[in-house]
Length: 104
Image 1 (cartoon, rainbow, N blue to C red):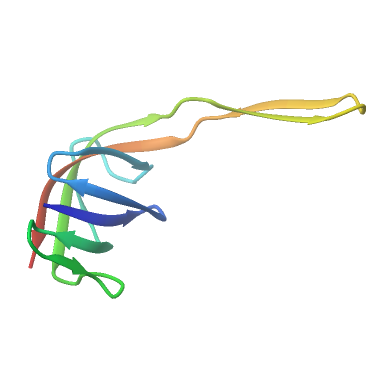
Image 2 (cartoon, rainbow, N blue to C red):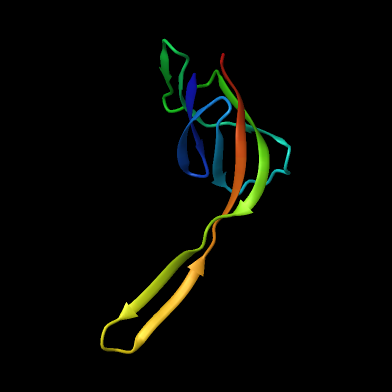
C-alpha cells in the first residue's frame, strides 16, 4: 500500500514504515503528524485518484528529528570583471516516519 502526499509544496510517494525528509514543520520530536493533502492511494489492487484530493484517505506519521541538510555552495562569477561571490545555504528539514495509511 502506498500514497502520494503533498507537504511543503512538494509531492512524496510514501509507504508504511518509510522515513522521509520534508520542509521544516512546526511539530516537536515524537509528535504525531497528520497529512491533509493526499493526492492518490493504492491499496494493492485499486488506485484511488483524488480530484484533486482523496477525501476519505488518512496518512499519519511521527516526527523523528529536526535538522539541517548538507551545505549547497552558490558561486557567482563574471568573466573579465574581477567579480566573484561565494555563499552557502543549508535547508532546514523535519524527518518523519510514516506509520499508517488508511483509505476510508
